[in-house]
Length: 248
Image (tube, rainbow, N blue to C red; front, side, top):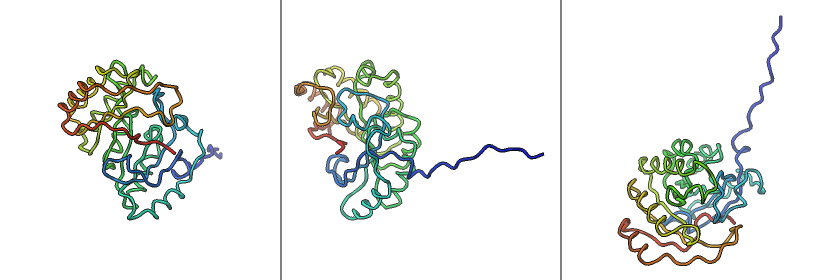
């Protein structure tokens, strides 16, 4: 008697499954001290009010680029850039990210990552492949869910932050500053958290309105007392006015 077997469908290769939202061939802002190409992946589970790439939040909602085209551009950029950064959205949303990182490493480029830590288990898996991480803190623990609009986001970010520092991968922690969204007390609590973990660098990134969907007034500057306290916690503290990871 013949046994019928269900059809088995082969999954398309990762180069066809990756959801690419945008590509910047050269940026001086996405990895401190380096000129890099930045690859933006679609998807993010959080809905931060000040997000400057809201068009990348949903999976499959932006014109998709081909991996082959990006790989060709990277090949042509040898000697002109110092690395490649994956950004988003939240790049760890895309399950093909480890394959994409390996492909970029095979081209001979160091690889950086911008992440909010939304998927700690995925971040942990790729940390050995990375050369640098820009970790986006959102606020202090108690205020996280209000800013991200997502239950459980504080716990996930905390777990990811611990994994990052423990890995030894070079990194910076950065917090986007808008006086109506984050109090000085919250900013200081977030910085104390990063310092307690043993973070290497801390950046207060000034809010910029480029790309933001939600109308927000111009932000007041952080007060001198806050800046002084951040410099005590982190001697290399940076107040940054440029947007990192701003998709074209």
